[in-house]
Image 1 (cartoon, rainbow, N blue to C red):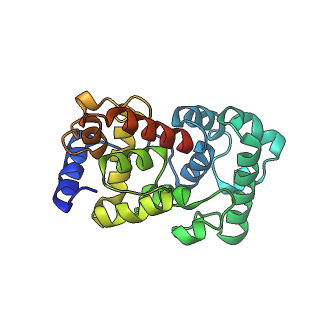
Image 2: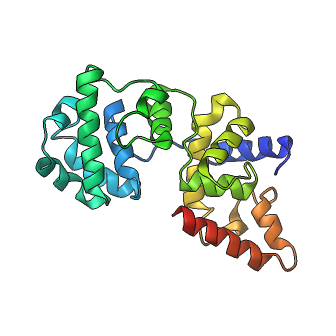
Image 3: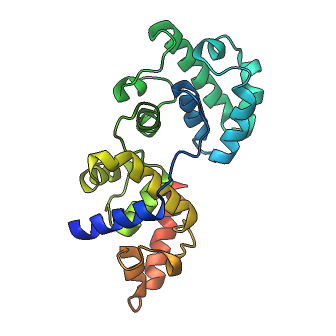
Length: 231
């Protein structure tokens, strides 16, 4: 794993490379972000935004969604994949918010995780981006990039989150989440990382291992296997 000084350098480089990093999901309220994040599982942010651009003008509050039937909601989200399960979770969540929270999304990570379809990653996304709660949501990009670079050495998202929370200052948790996502999308691709243009190449453990004689093919196979598992 990188030294503390190397981690700090890597984070500074990411901050300078992606100064305007922000959520790709489109939302104007905590509830909109909650719905969009539930829909984003096993889907792309581009597809989710296409769906919510049609859904939110019709219904974008817990009360409005709770009043919908499956037959009314599902056509709006059908393109997101697994829409039956996601749609039922959204309807159940909306009804719980109306019945138990006065139609408001709770600004509490633990309470968010009690809602249908809301796991730790989704709760972290909503908590950090809607309420300013410091959190690191570990999606496939964050998992891949942080373990490749050496900010973490973990085999699952839970351990990765724990290690990133120790490696990154608390005040930078939310921003770092976006830096790592941007880096994963723009440079550190799952199968064909653009190491030759990466500003972190001189620090990255994956890159340095690949440069060692006889290690390139082994590193490529290991990363490809991990990427396939996470995807």
